[in-house]
Each structure stands twice: as C-alpha cells, then as structure tokens.
Length: 180
Image 1 (cartoon, rainbow, N blue to C red):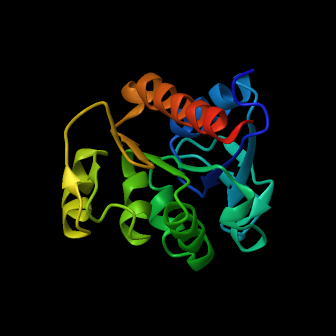
Image 2 (image 1 turned 90 degrees about the vertical axis):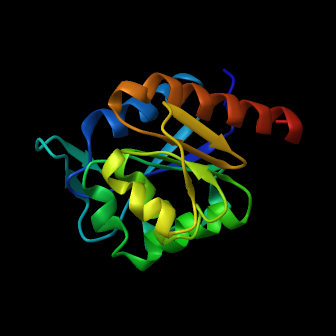
C-alpha cells in the first residue's frame, strides 16, 4: 500500500459535508494511511449537515501537527465552527508552517484563511468563500483542484476524485523522498 506509515488528521465539527469527510477518509485508508478523526473537543460525536454522525478519535487540544503527515479539512459549515477553536486553528497553522500537507475542500478554505495558510498561495474552494481567501492574501483559482506547495484545495463534492488523487500523490511523493 502506497501510504503505509503515513498519518493524516481529518478535522471534524458539526455540520460537516458527508462526502467531503468520508471520501478522503476511505480513500486514504484504502492506500494504507492511518486516518485520525480530530474534533474540536466540544463533544465526542459530531453530526453532518444531514445528521450522519462521526466519532472523533482525539480532540484538537490532545494532538500536535508533529504527529501527522497531513491535515485534511472537509467542508460544509463545519469549518465555520472549527475556526472558533484555537486548538484546531493552531493544528492547521502548525502543519502548514512545518511544510506538511494542508488540504481543504469547499468551505474548508475558511480554516486555511484563519490559519494564515493561503497568504501568497493559489487556492480554490466553494465560490462563496472566494472573498475570504482573497482577503487572507490568497489568489483565487476556479479549478477542480489547486496544488500550491503543501496546500491542496478543491471546490465541491464533484471534485472529490481529483482532490483525493492529489492528496495521495503528494503523500506518496513525500513517502518516497523520506525513505518510508
């Protein structure tokens, strides 16, 4: 499996978009990565926009960016809740600043903006967050997936195959270059 030994944090909060959380989780697990569901710590189980529950393995105040090779942020309205959690924003900032993969889809770009991870970067997301990305110093691009350094972004569930493909490719390259 391509990603055996890789650890990925998938951030979660209430009102997450179902496909944008579960598709990356299952795709990364399929490649052998260990995916840790990291919640804000407000509770242990979070509900999607449609009420589908997901249980956090850990809370953001219990983890550090050092434990992971990547952080993935799904969309829905969850990122609006996430950015109110300093430990969650700090986790994203820590991963980004240490050069680890920081990936977001849809409204997930809100977390990248709050963590300072779009400044000077090309990024995409759900069209209504365009102003947030631009105001945070990013360059908005309307594309299914945008890769700029250690930041990968996508727009909506329809873009999930491209989003997951680029995450896997990035982590696979990182595995090869580190000898894992």
